[in-house]
Length: 358
Image (cartoon, rainbow, N blue to C red):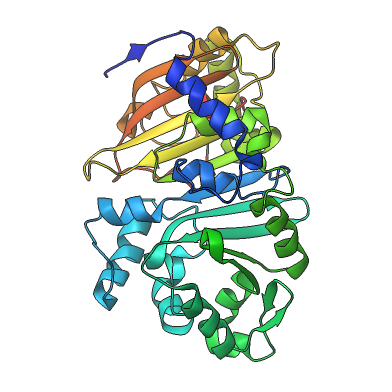
């Protein structure tokens, strides 16, 4: 196992990234957006978002050598290969590539990036169209499918589901277009679309105004697919309580030996498919001011090798730890990942080193 352990202050370039990410929500929407795709995508989600997903479709198409994805076979390859390699798991439109192209006139094949957020008030998908598709094509598709415009929001009509299918109709029940930013906002509730437009238009703060979320996002910039979660959701999704009392006992003992785990304030994971053999994975966690970050890094590093509690085999059979970093509030763990082994972008399943214990 190749392990490089580094406990140090964040370097100046990363500080710049954090500052840009944290302050992104109030930046002017009129200037060209030169930020990373992840920063732009998360900056479109409301500040109270509890679960955020990100898919860099432009990067994924490059990694899969699909070019413009202008043919039916290329679109089929995009949907199939992205799913097989765990790249589209955080997407809500990735499973509908061919269907969306046929009925709406656009799909993930025409999108630069996609974000999906779940908050107490609703769930929303935001997509940034690439330069190959005109917004008029999107409008024409909505009209053809029976959507009715009400102010800024287009709502599916009584016959829409029959034309596009119930699942897709629910995903894109209410849609708004932001032409100057080439952004599409969609939700199952028109009121929530309107609320998110306030974030996109910089009238309301985004998820990146929340400092722990911004810190985690800064450590995940450049990845193809990202999942971010708030505090207790991290604990629920990575624990072993569903595995039975014997596994729970093993997990508690392992966590105790490692030195104990604190609950992150915000946590994220992401995957990069840039090599077509092994993938790169990062796990980033942000903690409150009283947490011993060095101690958390030691404990989580210890849990990142050895028996994969709650799963089969050893951790390093699937995730080979290659490096770690930490500052005063955030730690990062980097891995080589075998794409033919377990998948992790669902966010579900035992993963003690990225969680809160048993």
